[in-house]
Amino acid sequence: MFTRLFNQLLGSVDCCPWVGHAYGHRSPVAKKFARPFLYSPAERRRRDATAWTMVQGVLAPVQFAVFLFSLGCVVHYLATGQGLGLATGSILLKTGCLYTIMITGALWEKKVFGQYLLAPAFFWEDIFSFAVIALHTTYLIVLIGHLAPPHVQMLIALAAYATYLFNAMQFIMKLRAARLEQRLSPVGAAL
Image (cartoon, rainbow, N blue to C red; front, side, top):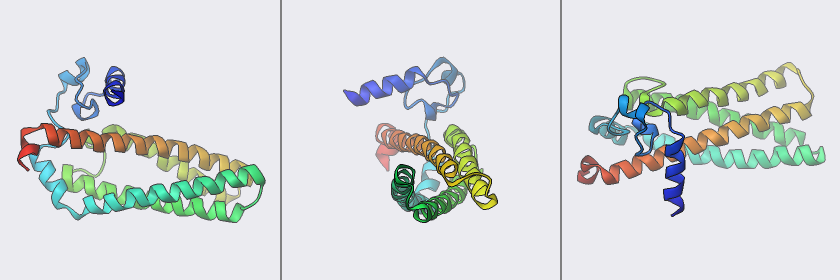
């Protein structure tokens, strides 16, 4: 019941022209630019054949674990004023993980869709990823340039983490859509 309600909620705010973002819902805008599935049969084969799919599958949970650890360190520093070095190191590790997953994700997108970024199936996820990268990079610039006190640096990190969390949810929803599509499509059933 919750899943159906969640899908209806998502569908009601869908304004993306690519059906892959509509999670089965076809808004009037989406119908105009209809793409029948998130992956074409050829794209699904390329997705399943490339090693970058496994790399992404490993890096995503690693990055999330680093995020949780770092979030704890940042919150601890903000609450107590202690642990600045650990919080800073954890943010640097999280940022390194982010850059790694973004580069390998672009390579994955090139293998599967033929372009490094902004493939129609992942357009909005990629757009929001730019905001995530921009905030993490802003943190690095502020840290290296000593442009703000540690408290402000940590607040920038929290803003970066909020955007990362939203972006991670976008990708989880896309993964769910791909699994549903594979189960429901005749091509997916044959695989």
